[in-house]
Image (cartoon, rainbow over all chains, first blue to last red; front, side, top):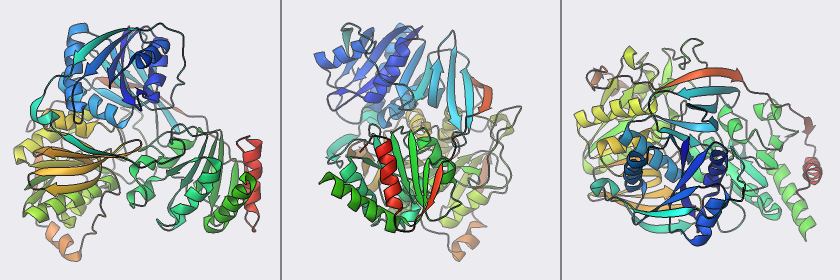
Length: 317
Length: 252
């Protein structure tokens, strides 16, 4: 099986999620990475170390890359006939995979947590809040397109050599490729990213107001934790979508997940139920979150969190 | 400006979901609601139409059932609904849905097509991008803020570290996140007016979209359940139990 993995550059390195997918793909046969970004010897060495046999380095472009990337990928697929093209399910990869699927008229399976490329293509995913596990076979002609949720696999260096790199100029696509990126704003000033954090402090409706999200930040700061949120408070406009943990949102697997004022809707549980330790604080003793919590505090987040922050700050002084 | 908003009627997320044991398709009762996600796209569309003296057409695919969700969208202020309802399309994947909705949008004509970044029930999260390719327009995705600027649209596009400010000329497709705007509630007047708004129903043939399913579910099994642990009532000292747990986990 020849498997391609799409990888995009983040902070001058291949995205961590794409390295997870590459590590898995390398166990299933021949691999090539289609890389979007500036690239460098270091970047390509990292791809090789994670199992990339070769690299197609997409160059050029200036705006939002999805339309041009999908068109160029379609040309490459036409020329080389890979059996499968795998994507880590990030914002840009979703854009590229969706456009590519429509362009080459192949279905794409999203939200995969495992994949097998033994002859055909079988994909595992979770539904109904992670309570049911579904196996789906892609039938029909390849290449099979699959979006894999971050944290499904562990990225590992398997010690491969630097791969052969072929530069491929992005194809112009006219109006579809015209969106311009006017500005790039970094909001996350410090602390780990949600996907990489060992500890995550997460808030839900039980906080009562957008202002009360500061209680989450106050506990996260002394712990060096990342902060997350439920869909309810993202929808309410309290915090941006990037903080959303759950089915529609991110999957996280930290050592500790502290859910504050989070009821534990199925939509949320699927994104965090694989944390090593779950701690929940909620006023409602019947909240479903307590059914998965290793430690459940029946109490008011407005009372417990300030004390917790104070105690943690006292320890770190 | 002519605005097309994609909406979906879904089983009430508050009631338990199930799969048909034979077809593995999601069981869809007659009693379906408007996907909450779509209220954001619809509100953005209504605001654009208001600013430009334009109109909003909602397009939707799936069994119409009691039409509760479609009526809600019309009551919020959409002018017209186009629904693709054909048993031949049951169990369609995202690409088939994108093809049908794109054909409907083309039939209506549009300056901007709006969708939520993912539905609540199927959440494949790629349908809007597929539509943008089929319609050959730019896709402004993961928009958490939208601004109309003459003939172009300016958005804040969510990124892992913050956001990008992205601009594109129309026609374009917009995929919005939750929280992008505060959706309006239907007024009594809106609910009454919705009853006389046009609803067109199209077949798979009308949109020239056969159901070309190329995936099949092999198995559905229950996932291992996680067990609950200790429950502590807070009497002023519960934070100490949390600290003890963090110590045991060796993260502090």
